[in-house]
Image 1: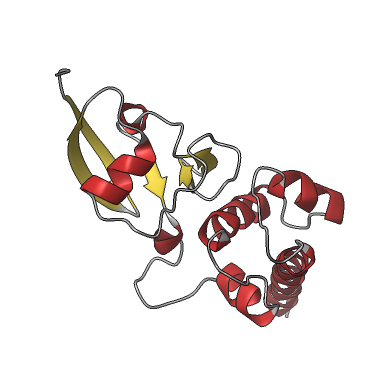
Image 2: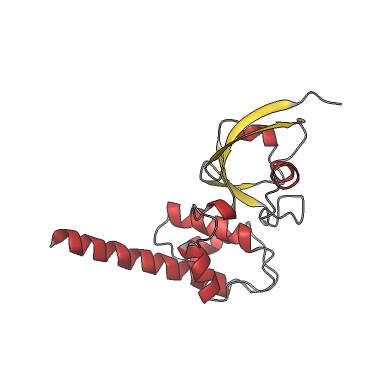
Length: 170
């Protein structure tokens, strides 16, 4: 048996501690030890994006990330994006409005990736969206509705920013 590594990190804005063996992956820590079932696992090889979480705001494949690497860092799952247990983010609302999911299995990873994309590129073009979603596999939607949902959020945020700027100028 390996020596356990004690971790302190923030999960969805809340301080957490855990003890893990060196070989435990972040997805396993989140799901099995901490009960975060919104983190899904599919391929266990880092190629499908289903297990994507944010680590310090960066999309991270949690099935390939050793858990000990999140020590003193911020981990955000899809559940932690809204800041509360009942609200939906604008990205989640757009996924619903655009029917950007079918079976829903890839949706948490897609929403997490889309959130990071829009934080990095507030007005992405279609190629940028495709490039960012390249690490996420969806076998149901054909991606078009997912791209439309991301474009919808970008347009809504841009319109809101323009309204806010116009109001501030008055």
